Length: 309
Length: 239
Image 1: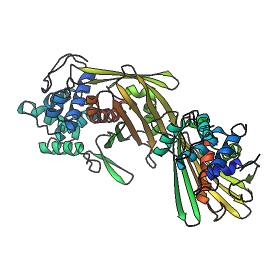
Image 2: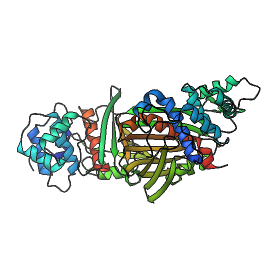
Image 3: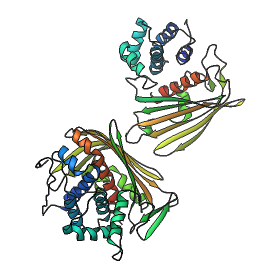
Image 4: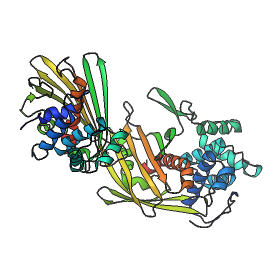
């Protein structure tokens, strides 16, 4: 962990020369932080883990490559749902970004894009297509935007032995393509939070992942997981559970991910990720729902990039 | 040998009210401890049932059996037994870590028991074929093809055949079977072994059995069915 910010003050950090992964991680984390915890209370409680301000996070999102539509849309939706309103200096960049990630045409009123983002953040868009394409799966019509994945509602469960998060995504790719990403050694392809994943034994995975609390401060976790991968005709499934972490900051880290064929839709695959975590530090547990949702949803956002065309 | 058969003694620990006294049961278990053919895990289940059902028995024989079969002292065993978390004892040397027994009675003449247990062994290493179960459940299948049921007095053993149907994927294996005698179906059931989500190398076993013929299991069908299913799970999956 580098540098410490006085508690109760949201940092306004803007650094040039910070690499894109750091910027994306910080912007994503900040958006989830504001959505789940709220800046006034949590900034005072969690010393050294204050996020970017909503406005600074929006600024980072506006500078990210536009082809990163899915993570930008998700983070922007969380900021809007958390109550963010851009100031005059940011309004033009925000409007352009909002229109881009929600497929809102220039002729449509500007509040239409905000309404789509708010609905997306509230998880009510699944039956309301806002793109030009749509598909009916399991009797429901899912809206698509330029062949993106379709995210389904994320579930957060607080249990005695940790916080459990379940995310589900419909991926416009056949099972064989998605199955490769379910293999534990390939998890590092699922977004900027993974620094590396490598098998160090037949069923042992070394995983390094990083959380950037803002553009300056970060935290790095190195964990060893017991893993098991199974491929069947209609599924690819991976289980994992914590063997140990190098710095002893985790009590529980287990879960599973699965890619399922969808009957009648050979070009579509259902991807499910479940993760349960309990940290040694109480303030990390306070933030666990936001952190775990961020990881699970970020993984889903990265699926298409990880799979390739 | 004097005293009740081991089969009857172990069965008695599942029956309410118990047809055999505690000293008879403990005596039978004690005698079987030196017998190569008796599974220590099955004997441990019998002792565990005695501890959980009879709280005021203090005997040197009971304390000795608890230490020998469960690996803990009597006071600890009583404390764990009072918690009623799992229906099987905490086995010190078996990979069984959690267990649950449920009964349903879909029809007044039909009794169904479901035993749900978590095994710390990979799915690929566990036996799922009914033949494997028959070979290892020797108390019930001491004579090939003859189902020997316990009870006082014991009913005549029934000659049966097993018709298995196997469904298999890399994530789960399921065997449906029915046991038949000359009069038709006697018992139906299903054994499902599935990888446990989020626990690599761990398998959840769900063993379901339904007694379809009224009276076949005597006057205590629920207890007999529970004893049979639990004995199979411990003897086959724990071994």
